[in-house]
Amino acid sequence: MDEAPTPGLNIAVLVKHVPDAQFDRHLNGPRHTTERSESILSELDEYALEAALQLIEQHGGDAAGHRVTAVTMGPGPAVSAVKKALQMGAAEGVHLTDDALAGSDASATSRALAALISHLGPFDLILTGMASTDGETSLVPAQLAERLDLPQVTFAAALELEAAEPGWTLTARRDGDAYSETITCQLPALVSVTDQINEPRYPNFKGIMAAKKKPLRTLSLSDIGLAADEVGFAGSWTAVEAAEPRPPRSQGIVITDEGDAGLRLVDFLAGQKLL
Amino acid sequence: MPTVLVFLHDPGAVLAKNDRELLTLAGTLGDPVAAVAGDAGDPLLDGLGSYGVSTCYLPADPSVGKSLVAGKAAFLAEAVRASGASVVLLGNAYEAKEIAARAGVRLESGVITDVVAVADDLTATKSVFAGSYTSQCRVTTGIPILAVKPNSIEAAEAGQPATPETVRVEVPVPAAAAVITGRVDKPATGRPDLAEARVIVAGGRGVDGNFAPLEELADLLGGAVGASRAATDAGWIEHSAQIGQTGKTVSPQLYISAGISGAVQQKAGMQTSQVIVAINKDPDSPVFEIADFGVVGDLFTVLPQAAEEIRKRRA
Image (cartoon, rainbow over all chains, first blue to last red; front, side):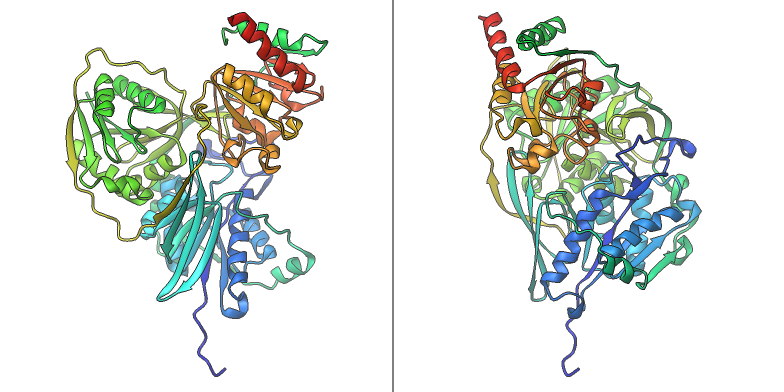
């Protein structure tokens, strides 16, 4: 090689193993935590991974020295979220797992992820989904950005990167209810993407076979310099005291239209004092 | 009485419905004060006064209100320190939750989102798994920061209105922040915001691109128009109208579902509605399992007939 290699983009994608929303979900774990059988890679994280893969493909791919690392934390089976990411095209996977992580709320999760990202990095870009499909709080990406002192662009519906001295400039489009915004920042940054940004690819046979040879590291809390009481139930700033399933909605009246259903609908609304 | 700070993350010229709900809740928990992320004119200050707000905190540099999350979070943290507040209430919109998240780290305080009720001892009732569970949560470290869902509280003004004192606080500008470089306004529909609407008429695949009968009924009922993912993916209506697992979660007084099968993805966004009405051609649609009133029929005849009948009764 005659030329010095251009420093590649180093992208981390945060992925989460969540209960499949197609089935009933329960808070039956210890201290009202989520039961994680029937779990999958959070659908919303697939968009983040696809966005990462498209960004590096647009700028020369692996050959240009760009690299996508899929990162997760959670109990043993959570590694399957990383494996799926490797099958889709991430180059490397990292699984932070430790018994002490159980029960982490958003603040403890973001503390653990911040330590993990700092340990693995530096990264130019951290990509996440718009929310997890289980906790649904959307707190973790914002807290991670605050802890790492990074600019935060959330709910990106379109994303572009431009190589500009001295680094990379990111431009995103964000669609609100009343307006659509264009947002820019310099990398490094943390970006969350919506389900409108792309159509995630399916792993093909080649990808599935290649994934088996890709590096997948497992780290524990001590590897990233965190003590057990900084995460999990002990390191959390909130606690769940009780949880119960909402009583199922009882089925009401169902009529078949015989030409007067609109009138009967209005009668129903009037009876409920909704007119 | 504890000081309860209500954070207006996206202030308008006057109080929004969700702001009034938050201020009402604040009044039940202690002495309300407000922090406004931007400028506050007299109409807004008068509004705050009518809910018993004694002090309104404003950023010394109002441009912080135009920044993305980081600047507003820094302002919230400073306003909490300046006011000595022991509880923070704010909305549950995405930006509000992110501001809560970052301010929580700055204040080393726990954040609870999707709150539907707050007890006197600050135990928060929260909706989980898109409304299929309810949990009771507490903030165990720091000043509780609670993001409260719209329509959770009935707004009521305080007895003795007062004009709030305004206090400007200096905000340390975050070193690294993203900036908004362009903004395109979408055409105003004149309809209420989906998250706050008391009535929602939502359409799905069965609408087949024609939302006109839904809009007509929504306008008669003062409601908003929503959609399933199938309808937004088809491009029949903009994505911000999507209700469901990956869209908005709503709990209006009345939800009228038209031409939506009601699969898990959609149900997740609307099952906490008070009354659900469903119209669908397919009698086996899952939506009928949760509907209070269901019509097996054609939405293109049922909805216009209902609209006509409402007009007749009101005449």
